[in-house]
Length: 405
Image (cartoon, rainbow, N blue to C red; front, side):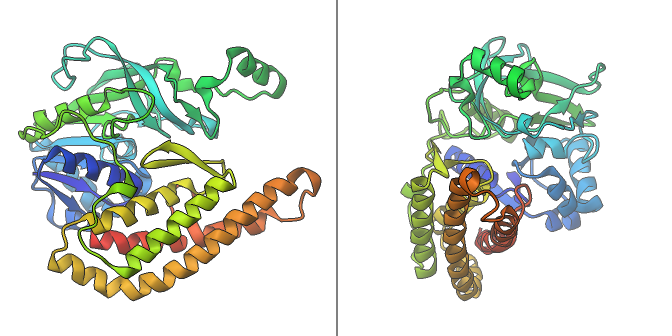
């Protein structure tokens, strides 16, 4: 049995859920208070992406100790992005490394595929890519602060070169000529080149007590689609096979298309919210504030709450695709009317905000200050919360949907 920590995961939790469900591996969704109170009894524990600090706060000292004890007794820990950061020295402490503090915000806003050099001779590396270069997907990753003495960690993959679909914020880095990037640096002092391309570690692994851990700033659970064929699914399925003792039912992680997910139970409040969200996303595309990246992921202009919109899109698609057992339906029935009321307020406000944001862009040169950015920021906070931690009306809708999960 695999345990999956859900707290502070949102879109990355749904991505992992899709991958594990597709692989046919038995799993259980866990919340932090349950772990803090009862510990872990699974064989393999996976922590999806999302803010590491919020995951740490949710687990509390008892939860952190429970996860550490689980690994020391022989458990396997797999952390992606925020789940990797959670396991570092100032979190669970499975790995003695720390996370690098980035002063340049652009250095964090990297997404797409990167060519990585893969280590050979390690049982957690698939034979098909060992000792080679392979593309791996990254979605706004943190950085390992690699010490001179690596301690109990071994680097299994290092970043090397950009893939053809790499973005920095909302700019397609891979399509920009080197001479233009150099000119920007000379004229404006802007360095768009991600520092992680200087051979920084992407995936590290090690042991703690009788157990093992692997920490990856690449999202190996990413579905196989898009312009670049990556080795992510091969590696992820290898880890499932090696650590869970179960044979995955697939050879690759299939595409995740929220619009094509089956509906196993009908609910008018959910159906209405899905239609409203699709209309909102269409508006965002029409205004040039949203753009396609993957079937499961919309890109967004800088300052637009893309993570929250993507999370809500996946949550509304996946909730009715879950088995409609009595407990799930009872939970949803208790929340339905409050969800209906709050979703009406949210979609009205979100439409207004997208239009106002586009108006602010139009007025930025001809009439600066006519539409105060402070007002836009306050409205965005009430609707979507903060960029990293979420919240607002959107966060409350997500919480109700995740209770059903």
